[in-house]
Length: 424
Ligand code: PMP
Picture 1 (spheres, rainbow, N blue to C red):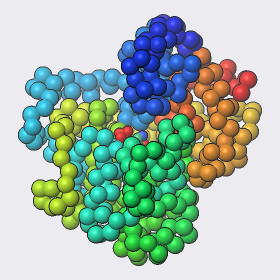
Picture 2: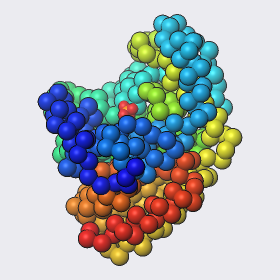
Picture 3: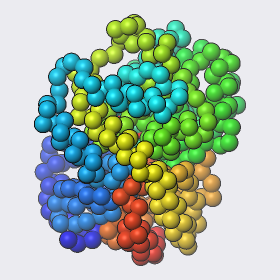
Picture 4: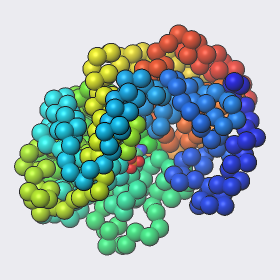
């Protein structure tokens, strides 16, 4: 097994992939690994193993779901047990009730849930729900926040939408564009002005922005959103697709002590299998069909494999102090990054962080875009060559997992950072 380096076999697969897929991939950020993506063969603990017999310490972790690391034994066995019983029935299964009990036991503001299949579906339905509930049409979102790949979210969107130069996607009707109002992250004055002057159904926000690198909320930003939305009878939607069960077992809401009206979840609650969820107060979630008139349905909604993997993952989170351990790893790695002798700033909240070169503060998307992306990419490539996979884009977050809570993994990473800092 070779640590890092270039990948001849992967390059050959890539040549074929370019024939079949737009830009060679099925989700754009994967094409950001240059000169060509490596093709993963397997994952174990903190490591990804590739088709080229290379090994990387993985700080991307599937872009968030794998808080326990790859192929966690407990989750794997539960999933295998489920698969031996069947994997889709077109009827409810007990696993969905168990996962809902678990999630609602941790998140005070979530009394009822609708399970869907991705974060995208979760925010799309949350927005529809907010409109149905308030009988208003407009949604306020923040510049650089990413809420998935549907029409109402692809306006000033972060993540791969910014990385590939399409924060405003083509193909969205102008009637839709006219219903989305934008403010800069952390700008409460803008929010107040818009809430006062426009009929806004809901304010959707990443409580920690994890899709422009990492950008924390200023003190009072989330509390301010809570108060303002209450004052102007608008719903507060926390998009906790990344932060749910990551910042704390009660998500960003538990960590910051602010409750949302609607919460969207994904990633960790599916333990690495496809999932999304919309949660909230009973009277809001009950608006979904069949009890209410806001339509949602899905062949794969609440599929037993995702339910089982999510439940098993949360059980491990509860049992093994996972969040504390991932935070302690994140601190060690972020401290070493801070020693890089090139001007930079590091934003970290718990176990999610990112480094921005050439700037001294990043509090919103406009400031994030001023960071020196070329330096970040050089650093990413150097890290890959030294056996460590950090996100291939400035506009993603570095994550840690339970499997990284290991001196060998941490020391190997620190060593890679030391070797990677020259030439950036
Ligand atoms: N919301 C947030 C905050 C996200 O980070 C993402 C994905 N990175 C999504 C929504 C969309 O989730 P999915 O990719 O599962 O559709």
